[in-house]
Image 1 (cartoon, rainbow, N blue to C red):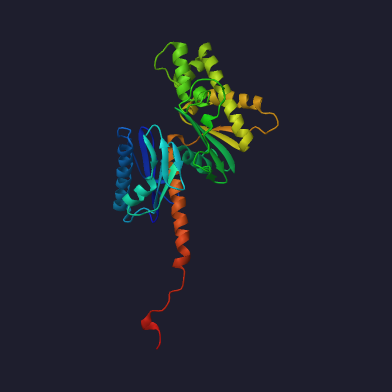
Image 2 (cartoon, helix red, strand yellow; image 1 turned 135 degrees about the vertical axis):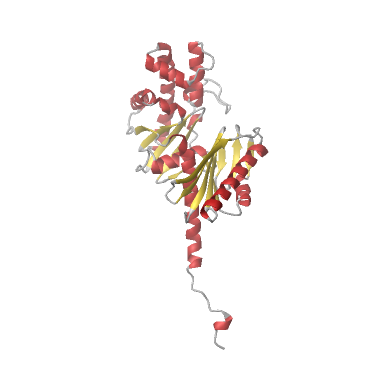
Length: 330
């Protein structure tokens, strides 16, 4: 039996990844299921609440006591202090009081609400590729591009929950229209979706993906090499902004596109070094935790919350007990 364990739940656009984890963040139980719902606020939120309740019941049945806390991480804009999932285009919600709803559903246990990429960055910083580095920049290259700023064992959320949105740094002014409404954002140049679209057009292969483009680069296709170089140049331009602002000790690259390995990272290191003048070039490393990073991060924020709650209660529990009225001499 685990004396202290927590719920960890990573809410993805297509899949929920969940675990019950112990004090060492090792999984004691793991589960996955499709996100489900129709994309409306109610359907997805209900699916989250139902799955969290199922995890709670599983923990009680296995360990004989409720979990110490729950950590739930979601995409979009997250106000972590208020416990509100402020906005997600993919999951169809706005200003959803998810922490309150989860706390009510889970019999009042403490709940930490976080951002999925920042949670993944936290996990990479503590137990993954960024471990041992006081300051790091984590960048996730997938359908979109997002980042996390790691500082001394924590991840900076920003004043309004929007820190790390490197995907919306403009690297090609006047370029392709981004979903955010701007033109030329990094996402439109170097995301897996953007590279896949570019390769589908160049190869005249509808449905081609960034992984197909990477394979074509390795095979020596000059069309693939050209668009890959454009994407890497755009990524280096975006990273240069991050490096100049944050001066990280290391850059950790994750997400689906990072599965290209050195096909991506080797030219990226060269391109970033060529753009850097007066600053030290940080080491660029591949992420170590894969698609488990978000769930591991959810476990970490839950464990942090549980420890904070225990520390908060400890002074009260250590107060000397006053004698009862029966014990007081007349």
